[in-house]
Image (cartoon, rainbow, N blue to C red; front, side, top):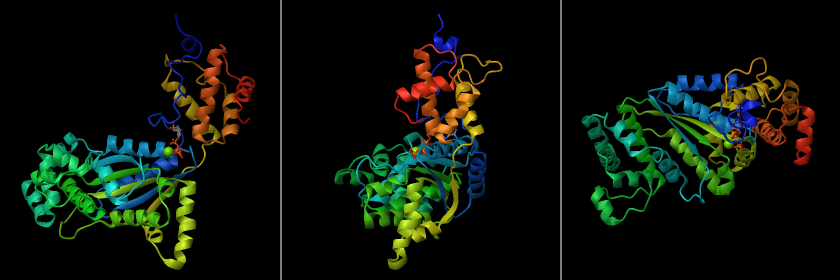
Length: 370
Ligand SMILES: Nc1ncnc2c1ncn2[C@@H]1O[C@H](COP(=O)(O)OP(=O)(O)OP(=O)(O)O)[C@@H](O)[C@H]1O
Ligand SMILES: [Mg+2]
């Protein structure tokens, strides 16, 4: 026997049960998507690195947008490697730059490294060895599938003296400066492997503020600026980096108003960091139409049958959608949450059509703002 969900709601599962569903279909954001697509098109294969910001209030879709950027590159660009990292550190950061770079390396599996590095010609490795010998040795070992070299790069564990000897390098990867040499070497090798750009979607940049204080914050931004400016004239061409930083409105305000103001008198790294920005993409609330689109798309994705006739909003109706828009002011996470609560309650009470009257009662009983 078919469940009520299937027979009445024409749904396989609740389409709204996941509050952070990055793979859900995207509603609206046409302008924003055009903006980020253009940045990717224009910056790919250029020499300089590019800083871009995706700003939005809580639940407006920063993580979601960054993921869509990541997906777009993965799908459409063979010559760009996208990675998605969250700046949410497990514990307090000691060496921001070192950990940041190792986090980048940690996004690569052994097989990824092997595939990429096997495309680099011997003379290019030799050129790297003449300028940055230790990174060259480590990447050469990784190319051959050496586990220790792989662990060394990612900082997965402490390497002892005996292991250092086996690796054939004298200096540990334990400072930001050294990590920058490894990153630069990697960008050079990427280019030699036919890859033009590394795209870094970096989420939750505001965590720099919650995890650090005073001068440490300055140091972190200074390090990011240093990574932006990374280049070596002797080494020759390298893949460039295209950054998309996801940051909350609060975080952005602290960065561009509070910290900048404080720096006016004493100088500091925030201004030079901000000065390097190429583009800012601001996420606004969804419109009423886009709110409807979000709901429709989610329903469609989870239908038992593609055909629901003239009523694509089943089990909701237009009036309910308008009501949800009024309540949420177009904040995507809240839209999803409102739909979820009422759908589950409708299921339990075997309500065929979810109306505004019903929704009001449900929200009231859940102690939610109406
Ligand atoms: N344009 C959109 N179309 C469809 N769904 C969206 C859209 N934007 C956001 N969502 C949905 O809303 C959820 C919340 O968005 P997201 O987690 O990206 O917000 P955020 O800005 O990163 O929030 P936070 O500040 O809490 O990190 C997403 O998981 C996604 O499912
Ligand atoms: Mg987020």
